[in-house]
Image (cartoon, rainbow, N blue to C red; front, top):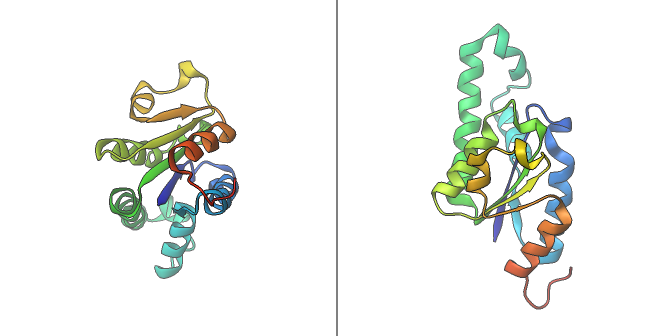
Length: 159
């Protein structure tokens, strides 16, 4: 099984690396699941395209910026559509000024892949659209882990 790790990057602390690394380790050790981590995939894309300064292009060269970001969008949506079995999404304030997480959650829902949402906003601030796309919605990672163990855990895996 492969999980896609959706959540804020552009406006998140350290691009959301920390929570992704922690859940990746847990998924591997507890369920023997692999992940697609868009932070790692994006960094690889930056290296391949020698785009280390792509964020500067947003102002200095908007067309170049848009072309590069489209590569990332295409890569991420392809992963959601054909590279994974389910999506784990951290929904917090960092996603509100972005668009990728919204699109990934919507796409996963639309094609029938389970979406496990960790909602860190108040219930009243959670978008009804995103709420409806979620297969399961919890407020913390411990609750998510319990759900994933019930759904995907089987004998022989550590918890």
